[in-house]
Image (cartoon, rainbow, N blue to C red; front, side, top):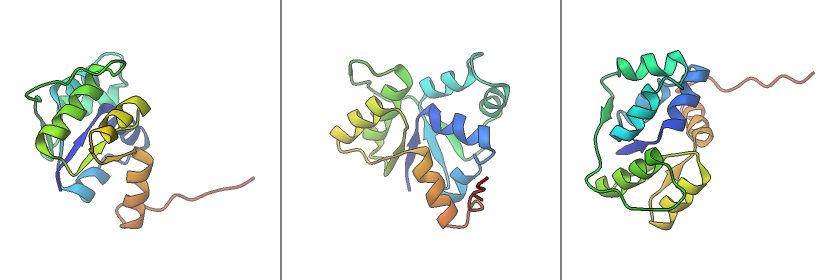
Length: 134
């Protein structure tokens, strides 16, 4: 399965300690160079920067050949959408609404982080969340 990702799924998965769900579900993931730069930004938490500085073997960084100009979409989302389209990816992992809408309008299948986590829990890749009510 060919999977391209934006930065938001990585930030969320690293924050909750479930980034290893990605290779367990998909084998490998591709991110554009713009997304790698976003993850390495000093604005990101140290765990995110450390992750991208010593990226695992299952993560590939690749520049898209061409960026389609779409208003109101940041560079990372635009690059992820462009790379997903170029590579004919099976899935684009993206959470931001405008980026998702642009991808869907171009017939790119998208998946939000929460949906990916549900798939991971259903596949037994991560433990199912325990809900506590008070």
